[in-house]
Image (tube, rainbow, N blue to C red; front, side, top):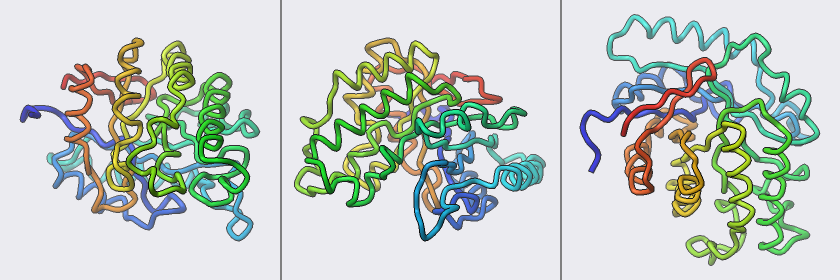
Length: 278
C-alpha cells in the first residue's frame, strides 16, 4: 500500500505543442491539481528524423514558441498555492543521423529535463506496419534494441531513457500481446542498462503501457534488472496527451518500484536529478 505522504510526479506528458496532442497546458495543470500531483513536467516531442511526407514538420518542435508559452503559463500558476511544481522538458527522439543536432540542443539550458526515446529505427516507427514488413517479429524486436544500444553508446544529451520497450506495444501478432517475454533479448537489455548507468542516466516507468498494452514500459523484469545491476535514477510518467490521462497510473507505478526494491523516485530540475523517498 502507498503511504499517504508520498509525493507523486508525472514527468512525461504532452500538450498542443506536440504534433500528436491538442491538449491545453493550463487544463493539464488543473488536472494535475485534481490528481494531487506534487510535480509535473511537460515533455513535448521533438524527432528530427521522423519521416512523414504528408506532414514534413511532424514532431518538429517550435522550441522558442513552446518555452515562451510554457514559462508564461508556469508563472501564472506560481501564484496558486495548490499548483504542483511545474517543469519544462522535452522528449527527444534519439537517432544516429541527427546526433549533432541532438547533442547541441538547448544550448542556453532552458529545459529542466530531457527524455531520450526511440520512435524511429532505421527510418521507421514500429507503430506502423512498414517497420515489420521485411522482418519476423523476433528480428524486428531485436533490431529495435540493437538500435537503442547504438544510440545510448553514442548520444549523451538526455537524462533518462523513455519507455525502453516501447516496441512491445506494437508487435503485430495480437496473440503475443500478453506473452512476448521470450522475444525480449535480456542480455542486450542488460548492456543498454549498463551503459545508461555508467553514463549517469536513468530510465522511466511509463504508465501508458497499462492503457495500450498489458504492462508499463518497461516491464517489471527490466525494472528489476536495472535495480539489480545498480540503477538508481528512475522517473514516473503517464505519457498523457490529454488532461484526462494526467497522473494516470502513477500510484500503481510507485507500488511497482517499491516491489522492485526502489526506495526513491526521481524528478529533474535544471537537468539535475532530485531523489524523493517512496
